[in-house]
Image (cartoon, rainbow, N blue to C red):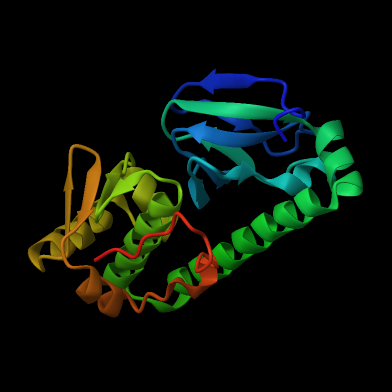
Length: 222
């Protein structure tokens, strides 16, 4: 993978990495910062469909497809490792162990998307946001970006609302309720889970869909 890379590129917060409809020349790996997958509607509304944090690949399958069916943008300044689409196709065709790892990564992405669909469709607003916080704590631990129950969470309330289908005002009310219940603290773009067991129970969170049980860097939050 290191040999296949053609270097890194820095993108600023809000910058579009790949637009829907483009035929991408590169697959990107997040080295630093946060990005997202999103859809831009005709009325100008956005819907965020996934967060991408250090260690995440921005859609392996785009090396195979002719054009993007969604867009990617930087939620913070991000450093991206570039892999030419031709090199990714070569890896998938001729390096079977790497191809299996890339396929595993895609399957986990699909599992996360399924869980987000359940989250949006069945959970009340407070549980929806709490579940998202639980997921991002686990994923931040896997990426080595969390300390105990605390991790960088650089999103605005507007971006949170775009993720869980709420207005900014409703998102603010939901966040305040989680704070008042003593479950979380969000200060200066850093989220701290104050009561991990209660937050898991409150949101009905089960990390099985992240398939992280055998990853050596995984640490169970207390």
